[in-house]
Length: 425
Image (cartoon, rainbow, N blue to C red; front, side, top):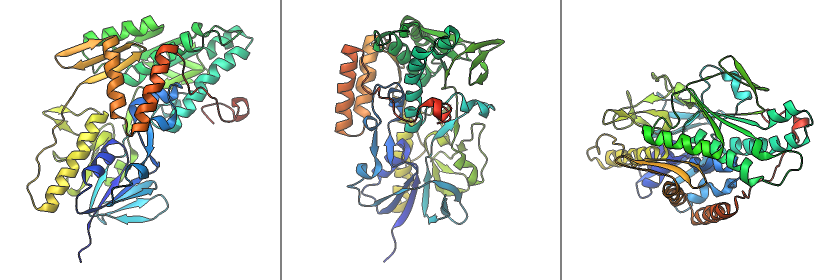
C-alpha cells in the first residue's frame, strides 16, 4: 500500500492553520510544527499587553483545535533549517522530518532598521510572551512613579512612547491613554495617572499610512482627543534605557514600545533562494518557490503580488494564502489543473483607536467613530477561534465599555529591582 503524501506545515498561525483545516478530507498526512503549542489571534495581542484580555482569551491550543482532524499530527518543536535538496526540515535538536510537500508560514519578527541594540530598550509585540512582559512593565511603571520622590525620575516613569504609527502603534497608544485617564483614576495617592505622557511617534507624514488620508487625519484627531501626543515626520534617532531621541532632543522615558517595523522569519535564509529587502521569499503566482515546486510560502514570510499590487501582511491575506496552497496541493494530488494564480480579496481595513473610536475603510465606504468601533468589535469577536473565547471577550469588552475597567491587571513575576529591569527579565 502506497504511503500517504506527507505535507509538512511549519507555523500554526493564520496561514498554516487555514491550510491544515482546508485539507481535512484530503488524502494527505499532515505534520504541523510550531514552537508554541497554541494558535494566536494576533490582532488582539495589544489587548493582552494593556490588561484588557487574558492570554487564553485570544489563544487556543493547536491540539485542541485540530483534535477531530485525524490526518494531522501536531509537533511542538522549533525548525532550525530547511534542506530542499534532501526534502526534509531540520529541528533545533537535530532531528529531521522528511516531506513530500512543505509549507513555510513562520511569519515575521521585529525589525529595528539596523539598530538591533534598541531591542533591549524598546520591546516589540509579536508573541504572548511579548504581551505579558509588556503588560508587566506598563503596570509597574505607574507603581514605580508612585514610589518615586524625585520629580524628574517620576516624570520619566510616567512617560510612554510608542514608536510606529501603524494599526498596532495606534491601538496601543489609544488604549494606554485610556488606562491612564480612566482605568487608574483615583487608585493612587501620590501621582495623578492622567498626567502620564503618551506619545505616538511616526517617521512618516501621517499615522495609519495604509488608510486613506481622510481616515488617517480622523484617527489622529481621535488620538489627540484621548490625550495622545502624535508626532509625525520625525524618526527616532536613538533609544536607551533612560529614554529616546527625536532629532537632537532627548526625551526621558522609562517605557518605549516598538511598533515600527517587521522582518521576515530568519528561517527563510536556509532555503538558499534570493530574498527581498525585508527577508521575505519571492514566490510564484501559485505561492510555490521558484525551482522548488514542492515548497510553498505563505503569510508574512511570502513576498507576493496580486493584480500588480503587493499583498499586505495582514491576517485575512494569510488565511487566503493558506487556503490557496491547500487548493493547489489538492489539485496536484487529484491530477487536476492548478486552481490558478493566488488572488487576494481585500475585504477592507480597520483599526481601533480607543473606546468608541475606530476607522474602517471598505474602499468606497469609509467611516469612523462609534459605528466603526462597533464594527471593529463585532469583526474581531466573530473571527476568534472557539465559542468560549468569543463569549469571554465579548463579556470583557462589555464590562470595560461601561466601567472603563480592565480585568487582567495582576502583576506577576520577579521584582524589577531584583531582576535588573523589565526588558532583561
